[in-house]
Image 1: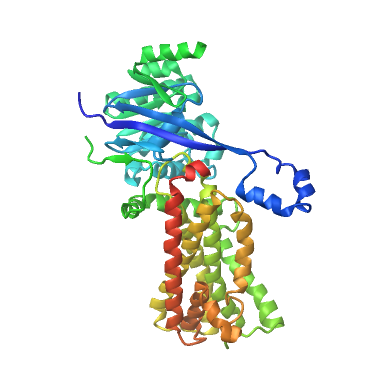
Image 2 (image 1 turned 90 degrees about the vertical axis):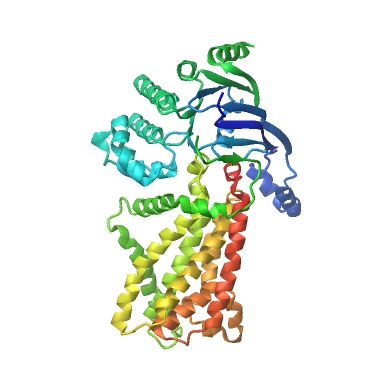
Length: 261
Length: 274
């Protein structure tokens, strides 16, 4: 087997959660005590003595590898750590432990329409959003027509996107992202929005990316049909740990099984 | 297989490759600046003229109250042109500083969703304000014609240098404040108040000479050096004080390095804190 394009080794991510005993939210408490005991209030406020801390590992000891041209699904219940993993992979937040090596460029599609500005037209937003996603201007110019026709918004391309229907908005946003040229594409729950036709269109495009263009996708979704459709292999996360890696249908089975427990 | 390898590890210290990365993302810098300019004057009638009106009207009001009524001295040049020169530099500084301090909060949605060098955001804020400055400066050129002032030849060198100082000082303080602002939103309440106070500590509406033997204290404020020198080269109010410019440049440089250090140190955790 060839060299993996993504190597994830023992990744851990720690969050410290503070449980505030929120007495300061109550104006009566502050007003009642600020004159009686002002120093105490300031002390509590600054030293954060109110409330307790808890350490929470959103991910621990996550390791797996992804190969070039693969589409790998990541599934798990809410709070399993899927989004944290994606955020680490797309370098939005650093891991507390471990190391990831990615041999190539990464593009992430965490939420469609990030960076869209409602006052700007569709055309302007394509360029802005493209730049945010790291697509070079000359590449956007080259692909402009493809992006527009994929989204099906030719008629409204010079209208501010605030006047778009939410469907048009999402289609345009996905379309820009789907034309990224990164070696690895990280996709999180895009299919949750848009109608059935659009979802099909997205899946087709993602298949094309992996099968024809030989690029790699990491796909996170709660939509099991979509995962089954796109990914041969999947990873099951639960409470921040990898429970299972393997053939998608087996992983889904396991997932549904843990669900009923 | 691609040549480039990304390594994601727990903590990364500042390295020079970060600067190269900013350069790689220069198109994004352009688009953020372009967006801010484009969006700002959407749905306004006079559009970009607002960048001129604001300092112009301030100049008129100040000229009436401080120049006419209070008879604030102005180093022997007409008060309107005296105060306007100070005002546009001051406004560049003040606007750039307040914009930079809030830039991470305003762009929260992008920061928590997409990776790019975060330094791009404050840089583009200062750039936007620089363009405002350039627009407002056209009025100054008009006033100089009207009052019959010719800038000294050395202005070709000095004015860009003064702009660089203003750019770096607002960028530096802004970087520091924006990284604090991510965690403590108090900044956005303190800052407007602080900027207003600072204006009175800077010779915008009065000449620097007014402070007498204490004027060296004011010299630590880089904007004092900037404004006084701008007046010296454009209007010939005083001789050009190179020591003052040197001090301003030195202070600015230290502040900017500190700002970048603070910003880079907290940068990786912005998405967790914001």
